[in-house]
Image (cartoon, rainbow, N blue to C red; front, side):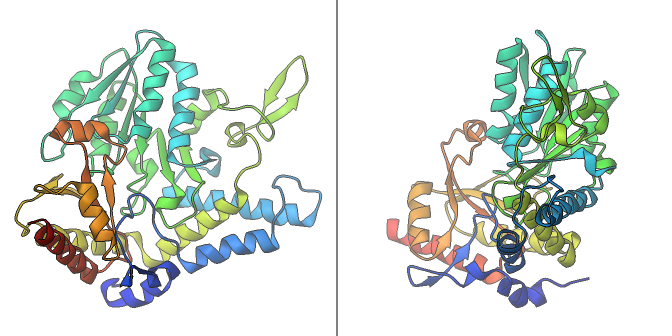
Length: 409
């Protein structure tokens, strides 16, 4: 078992950007919920792909295409193993979580959703897991139902159970909230939905980099995440879908790769997973994502979870000692995010001044405006942690907030 705390210097050395100075201060990067930094092995994999193996995949006539195809499909298998999918054919490469959700909303929606049906989401969802379902409901004449959460940031499961009925066609919920950090009881929620014959999509964008995910143990029907949040490149993501659903769903887009045969009279579609991968895929991004997954697995997701849990507990304890600071999201089951406000200081002002001290955080509504509305606010200051962050960086954040607070006083 790797002790990350005792190996943190070596881990940080894997991430070149962490040597950056910002306004003559060492970079303290605490915006990991938005995007994580990349280890050198991932950067090298991207460079190697373009400099050594750049050729369109699934064009097996020449050598470079064969090498690129093998690497791309090996990456698919790496993702399948990482999620414990039954088959690599259940892994669809997308541009990210947003496209993965939209794919299901369009394709599953076209097949299974009709006027009068209902889709259930939660009040704490990212806009990417709200807007596609709203658009589906508008197209189909369906209705969006919402699971509320309490002021601690926990979903009201009794309301959830009451929302499911014979009209419900799908439940879509985040495993971890990008704003509150709440780890939702998705296993229990899936069991409840399945008892009514309702499939479930899990948004894992804020989960896979922090906790072990086993889609078969969860019994998730769909699971989505983004590469850039798990130390991989931007522009590549994953949709896992149970084969029984993917086989029934129509293609999301038309074009090359997703076809078996085309004529002006009729087009037949390719087998899984290619039916949902129209056009040239990001075959460089897929291999870089696989490299990022291997990096995480080498350290151990359980070790990452244990270290980040300690970091979050320390940050929460230290920040709570600052007079006038309020933390939004106090669930007992929480991951790597602290959203906060400091009395009389707008989060944007606080974030701007902390940036001058080299501390990078996110300010705003974090693409979760219903969460802000729940608390009657318009924005928060969000610190989010990754495996390379340190307890000393938490101290720097606390000292920075105190310094800015003194300036305003």
